[in-house]
Amino acid sequence: MSVALDQSLVKSGPLADIYEKIIAGKRIDRDDAIRLYREKDINAVGALAEFVRQRKAGPGKEKYVYYIHNMHLNPTNFCVETCRFCSYANPEEQAKAYTWTVDQVLAEARKGVASGIREIHMVGGLNPACDINYYEDVFRTIKKEFPDVHLKTMTAVEIEYMANLEGISYEEVLERLIAAGLNSMPGGGAEIFDETVREKMAVKKTPARVWLEIHGIAHKLGLNTNATMLTGIGESIENKVDHMLLLREQQDKSKGFLTFIPLKCYYEGTTITADEIKEPSEEDLLRDIAVSRLLLDNFPHIKAYWIQLGVQLALKAFAFGADDLDGTIQMEKITHAAGAKTPLQLAKEKMEALIAEAGYVPVERDTVYNIIRVAEPVSSACAS
Image 1 (cartoon, one colour):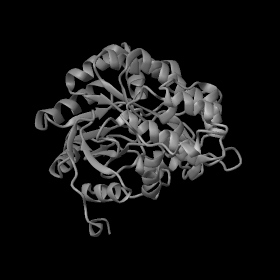
Image 2 (tube, rainbow, N blue to C red):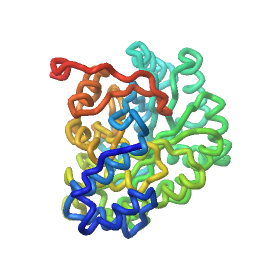
Image 3 (cartoon, rainbow, N blue to C red):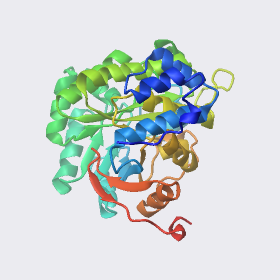
Image 4 (spheres, one colour):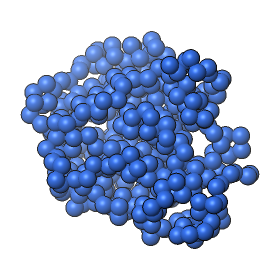
């Protein structure tokens, strides 16, 4: 397959050796990734990532950008943890904490299904009132009424908490939830794996070893999962690269990750101050996309999560290796509670128009990237 690459950007100069590795299909290493982060010419880094994205997509799919018609559900926002980057940890938010009944969760699910969603993305706080029996009831109730809706739910953090709460193994928790209707897992809770950063940000939950172990067990049990990385919490370039390398190593072992999702921290309502972190710039966020596409050679997809990046930056990320815009979402709460000003949802037609106007082919998918349909070209009027 022939994939275009602007060789003038990379064939000579400081990235020439990395260019040769990539052209030959060889794996880049830690030092290469750090150099890519530090390379002044971001367009050269982006050109390499775009080349790899197209090559991985396969013939005829080089311009495909995926999205899903989904909804987010957060059954509880109460959390016993106090991570400093989460607005739910502050007293004002905790005073507004809620926990839905099973019937309330079902009522919200019905609203999404009525609009045609294919996936429910469900995560919540670590709430002792929401034990494994609660989630088994939630899953079974949703599946009884909507057996074809895909349940992507339970971060590794929630699995660890539930196992400790019940005094059972991670594997038993997953087996019980799968029997109740769990179909796949999101990638939340990874944050940055480096322990120094986690200690500074009061992240006591789910260290790297446990997070990776739980995802490995999920893969063994037949679940696909995603993986994330949270930036803007005092991490270094080296911390980010090491985080991705641990994910790459786990993927080599268990092969169940579908998508990597670089995330950006929002600070409203948190205890993080400007003098202790460097807020990521747009260029920093595009580098996260590009370097992850080059370093995570065993991950099928890289997501430009529009709810975090903002729509326009997410569209730019397609030229830096991203091939997924996420979904229609419907009423995202976690990022918006911390001050995100992005829309709460996007209609399917709007998503398709945005992808097309960026020069790519909109492709509706299901959770595990089966193609539902390749969108027809849209008129510019649709995107206005």
